[in-house]
Image (cartoon, rainbow, N blue to C red):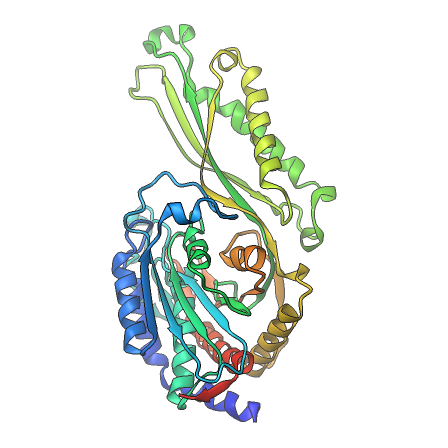
Length: 430
């Protein structure tokens, strides 16, 4: 019976696939960088409404979430931080409920001249769709939606409540997913189709963002010896942070999911600014850092060590010991999460259901991997007692130039998602 339904779902995805690619192209054309997600969310809300889902759209209120575990501090305004959720309400509720989560926000495109084609004018070539956000992760949003469409085309619907979430802020805080939890959205499992090449993510790292602010003494460059160059003063601090990064990656520090990785934790100095004039010794410098942490590594303890490393390095500098740097936290305060450590019946059942769906589509075993990035899965797994399965299509150059997603892979993930929903939630007549 399930094999017959899987076959029909596969055919239904194939029949609608041209429309799915067109949907993905239109969605990718919206330049939904942080603070600019409104047009993409408008598009998504219309599509959910057309399908008859119960629509919930709201602006994130920091006061409602800033006291919750998993909250990340922000420096930017939140006037345009809007989530969209479409809910399918089952009549029978005989199955297990499900959250289908995906983020609408994308990272900046960078210098446009380094793209082969404009990043927000998506194009299809040789089985790939090119465009910023097409892979990370609008193809996943499309696969979630068209998996539900495949069921509907057969006159079926999930026999449990399903919450389709299109959230903001995944790329910098995760506060969009946290706001969904604060609003009361709960389910027996969550599926997040991030682009990890049709593999199930067993563990993900946590991430901490911080900013280091240095102040120097301005003087004419002809008398630079009497001043303090704030930009050059940053160099020994960065060197000390990289030494800390090396220590954290030591073999004895790695948890089970990461024992095979020599350098899972990466420190990245992603942005640096300083000075006002080429002939003036710079009086200020600010650099922004991203540092990863392992699952179950304490954010509080990690921050304490980061601060100690920076201050120790500063105190060994002739100038900085009298003008200690300031450390400001903004953006990610993300804990790591390991699905592999979830021993619940729900987690085992959800993984088994996804394994069956994946094997039905591909004919091969579902591969598993620990990743060196973070996703919104942590909110469900750590703070809502909900196993979060991260499983999505193959994409390349995410966060880079010429980002692209494999359309055949998106097709397979859509089929597997439809089969997973039918298995996990059960089906009823629509």
